[in-house]
Length: 327
Image (tube, one colour):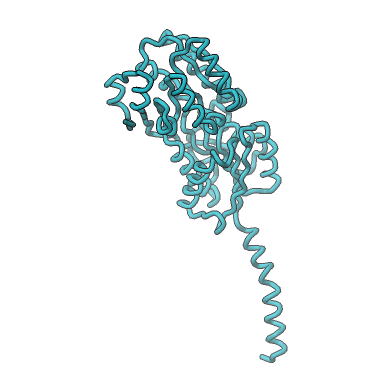
């Protein structure tokens, strides 16, 4: 080959490299990760989601791009964020929390959506059927809402002489708040308990809410699911101890931080599973055919050190059922 021809050929190849690299980047799938929480609170859950993606063969920055959208507990921002992800033509949307799933559903009927939520997706209108979702959504439910009555039952077992209890809900998570209140109010009536439902819009409301709990002579507290409680778990836990308020939450992060009890499924495992589901969608599986995943195991965690501080004697029968006892 002549030198001039070789140089021309080499030049054309070099000129094509950036175009080839650009084409490779554009071919990389893009996942929109939409969350009602903030990065500082939601990062452990996002990390579990990425673990699931990796198990499915997708590693962020290598063969998949993730566009993160955090609403910082301002759920009214979620519809705009979901619409932006759709405009950017992401390959799929993964949603964290119920408000995010509902916002994504309203934004598109074509982009695949994988949700991680705390309630029944059929009741919320996200899917037609758990086994055959039938649309562009599927995912994981950790059934936080459905087992709220069980949390009330457990707290009632630990506090048999208490007849006035309260449920904290975040009214900005309208779908979750209404369903949780209805479920727990129904359970309270079965046990002959008086139940007050108190709204918490942000962590700024915590002090006033605890003053109201004292005024109402509440003796036991159920903390509902909601992004405001995820973000404010540490100060909320401290307030339950400071005000000698026995409380139960959805996962072990509460008793691990000094709260009394928790009962629920492993939330991080739900996010990992949502990551594997997203990977399956990226490989071409249809959300319409992917059954919604549900937890098969619920853990009861009791902090006996906190029980002692609160002057509570936890019945041996309850301790025997605990999956973990912190002493």
